[in-house]
Length: 119
Image (cartoon, rainbow, N blue to C red):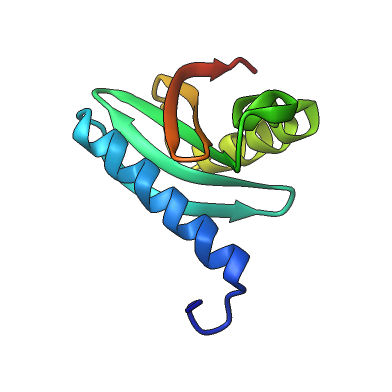
């Protein structure tokens, strides 16, 4: 049953993001924030890996046909992620090292692509 005010699709997306967060935490990353939104972009997860901030895009597809979840991160999505990250980084007096990772979920298979997006 979806949470109040959320569609079934949004609730499922939230569950995939929680699974991605748990996976990253099992691999030593520390959770900072989920669903950072600004005008023009959103970041699904912000994590910390040592000194580095990691901006994580979570993509899910039922299967790997049509290129799968990782292939669904196109140029427009990369621009929105880069914009949201630049807004997020305005809160720091010194910009920390950063990277963009993708958690690609195809069916039940989760793959962590480190430094998958270069901006």
